Image (cartoon, rainbow, N blue to C red):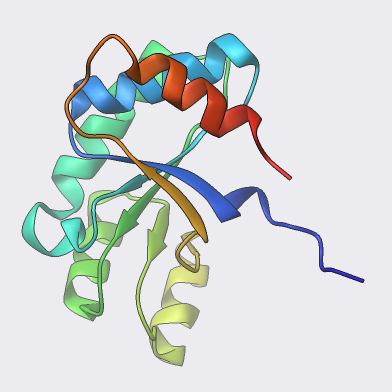
Length: 140
């Protein structure tokens, strides 16, 4: 018997506002609550303030879906702490130590494992929306 899949097992990796909006708007049109994830280690080089600004804009633009926006902080605890201070509510941190987990929980922040299935969006073209639609609807 296989374990039930988490809704966070599948995510769309976004790198900027246009790709994030396309993913969220596509999910909204399908009636699916999207899970967005930053590029690997974006919490380290771009930071929590950038991610929070980007995802706040997406949430405002797509009010009828519950967007989960996971910032990838790599293995850097300092990046995760900065993201928490910036107001990010969902993070992934490789090998998060127990103290970070406890702190995150106390702050109302969820630490997620990296999703097992990630669609990485690059340059947007006329086929991108169709690719996202197929990815979001082809869930086991």
